[in-house]
Amino acid sequence: MAESNADQEYLMGLLVAVSRQDREAFHELYQCMASRMFGVCLKLAGQRETAEEALQEAFIQIWHHAREYHRDRGTPLGWMMTIARYRTLDLMRARKVRQSSGDQPIEQMHDERAGPLDESLRSAGAAELTGCLDELTNAQRDSILLTFYKGLSHEELSTALSSPLGTVKSWIRRGLLALKRCLEQ
Amino acid sequence: MKRTPERIESLAAEYVLGTLQGRARRRFERWMMESVTVRQEVWYWEEKLGMLASEVPSEVPPVSVWAAIEKRLWPEQMAANDAPPQGKNWFWTGWSLAATAAAMVMAVLFLQEPKLPVGSQLSGAIVQANVSDPLWLVSESAEQRLLKLRPVAADPAQSGKDYELWIVPEDGQPLSLGVIPAGGVHQVTLTDKARATLSSSRTLAISLEPRGGSPTGAPTGPILHVTKLYEL
Image (cartoon, rainbow over the protein chains, first blue to last red):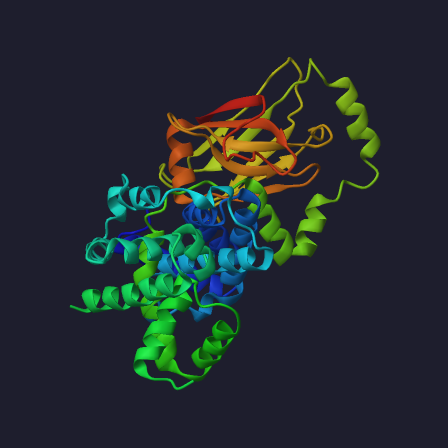
């Protein structure tokens, strides 16, 4: 959906209007973005109630802080998706909510990333990121994807992967640094 | 803890990923406040890792989320819309008792469609039984893209239920225009998508849903009324 430059410009225009307290632009922004953001909230929280509240919190934040967006923070779409993710993580931490499917096999995590995607989502950047993720060791990649999509802590990851805490910490730290080196090439 | 570039790099990545928690997270947030370099490192990771989020399938949230956002941001306005009309309760009660199976529904729509030639309008009526009063009147202010649904003789939905307004596309899922408040004006800003869909299908529907609207994003209750619009 909102992935082309024209769409990003449109979202940018809406954000500017929202920063001027334009309620209709805010509603339009909600209609453009709510489903995308809710998908992320739901996947992360694993249950609807937390996801719905997180989506609500995210849009309240966007209403109050639209003026804080700038180009260095990525695309308008990415910025809003990040807010959705942070608000979900906040609620999960506050409530220690963990989805019942939290123990699902890691293969499944991997499959979802590689699953059938809306073609328009395959932006150059996403392809590059996917390429670099493929260069990590399996353990590093799985650790990063599990934490990203499921919001696991180091301790939970250690349990999920049946590996010592120090080991999973190092997988994540080294994996992230290797990822950055690859992206910077 | 010293702020070496390597440490900032590492902590920023874990901050965005979510594994930096507790005291370490709060200390890092303080670093972010103090240093633009630290913030830029965080933005870098938000953008890069954020691409993983864009690969997650969309999921339509329930209408109640938007209602809750409006209620929190603009409680005065929402309270005004929610309040039942003063002194009219007897009428609504009487109406709902009388108007059951033989309930008639008629909505007249005046809808300015920008894609049509200037001055043209869409209008329509829903009639379920042979009575003449409309339940709701609908109008759109073209430059504000605001669709207004004004109750005329509509009875409130039964306890624990709400009416929800939909655009019915030519194919695919109906597009929610939100829950119709009892006794209040229902205003919807039409998105480009909504306007395009409506101008091609010209069909609106009203369904009976649980309080707060359909939990799934698609109609779950009985479709009470369907109307086809006509160009004047």
